Length: 275
Image (tube, rainbow, N blue to C red):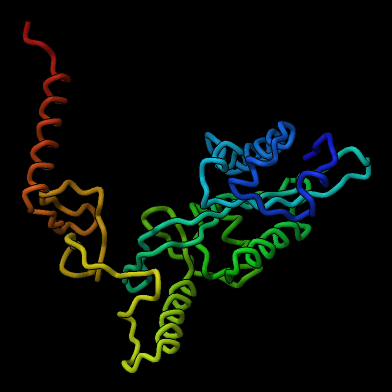
């Protein structure tokens, strides 16, 4: 995508990382519009109603970073934006193939797009390698936010990551992700000279497997969070046809009664008058 100016004085190198502070410091309307336009093209390619990447959103998200790939055109006064890659920190509850739940902060790929005229030329791999080097991560340590088939194929082709595990939050991780988590837990224990043998029950630093007041079925999952369930209310699980036990504390009961009152009020207001 052409930009009617030389971006070298503003962005520097052809591969650049922009965090919220750096985006604010750009102070250039032409650059802002170019980034927003590239974000719109990404949204259109994924058939989204609104773009995931805008300069306004980046300024409001200090834990998000945008990686840009651009080049200087043959014309000295123009530049070309080739692609973007946005990542950010997300606190997620993830489960592996054994339905063991992990809780921690993960770096997630939130948006990834290479201009259609520049695809299949290695630019996407350049963006990913630059991001991994900057974030000090390996590909299997990433989570993907609602990835497209194209992105999954990209991860398989370049990083040999297969058998994606879809989470109920539409995030995707790969089996190697959980092996890296367990490895970090083992290494951390070794560095701290812990005498006890590390097993799969020990969460790594920054992670946890908390006990949860909600349980699905008869123990099919070790730990599963249902924050959207109505507190203090026993319901039937849709998928497993088993009861979900909620919070029965005083606060939970009051929340349940308030919810029932709202439902009754909504029913009354939606009913036809008798006169």
